[in-house]
Length: 433
Image 1 (cartoon, rainbow, N blue to C red):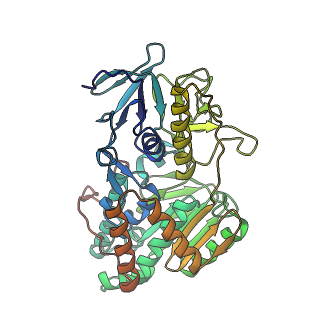
Image 2 (image 1 turned 45 degrees about the horizontal axis):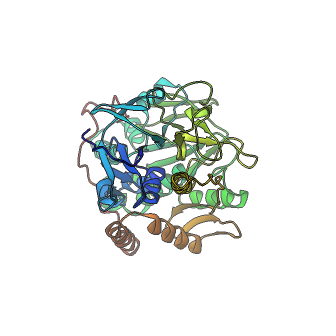
Image 3 (image 1 turned 60 degrees about the vertical axis):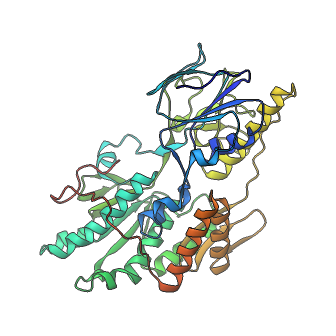
């Protein structure tokens, strides 16, 4: 890998997500050699992936080069690599570009879509956990309407304009709201010779309310917002099978659709060598103590979605969201510095800053530690928070300008088929990138 030798202890960070970047920042100008590994050369602001999928933003607005993040960090190196395995006895990481020894290892690999072992759903539905997947979804949505113009088969046309989103968490709710606004304000102008009123957006939730992690008032308000936009909200229904054309559920409800978007769960990205049953929990997460150390190891840590730190408040670990990952990365960075100063570790205490979800124009719900509110004010707070946590001044400016333009013009100009997704013979055979 051509990493120079150093008198400083080497910290290898696997993953350039929220946790990995937060940790690298804390180790800046400290007496460590930091090596950051990721299969992409950019950090993705995942909370806004749905806006890429629906043409509200271009992908470069929510991505930031990792090398630019660390370009003025001394003794910090980035390598574009895919980690294959970890040897915990020899303290080595094996990647597709070589092998590297470590003094301290931090696993911050994040999460991926969890299909819960359902092969048909994995093969035929769309995921939205990365920029390539979001671009695939954007292309598929637009290609479906182009194909709907060409078919004379009424049933096929309705299937092409029928969207099923599985999962009523923030991702599913925000995506459903964005698609509903496209149906209302953009499709009639783009496709005047197509009866876009027949387009359907269905949000399918397995429990009795959407946004189950938020307050009940936020769930009810979000549901009313969605229904006001014309979204069909289905509760207590689970999708059991999907062949690319027909989605079967555990009830009598059947959806004929060319686009099923799976937002019903995630699991941690596992690595060979750290897959022992002793510390792997539900969803592939790695059990860690209050200092982020993986059970049984003193020099191997995990932060973010991949880490499960069990406590009385969070018996199944912290939420798999950006805030816990950033706070864990920062806390681990401080502890590694304390270790170099022969000071004891400080346990991690998560500060819950609340949860938010936007449903559309002037519509959002927010559960903050001391306040709960919905509507226009919640929408403005949601925008401010997301702009604040975006990496890079340019990205903040570009996203803000896009939001202002979209708000004033009621438009989404990034509805471009840059790379066609369908195979040209009807429904796509492979939906996962």
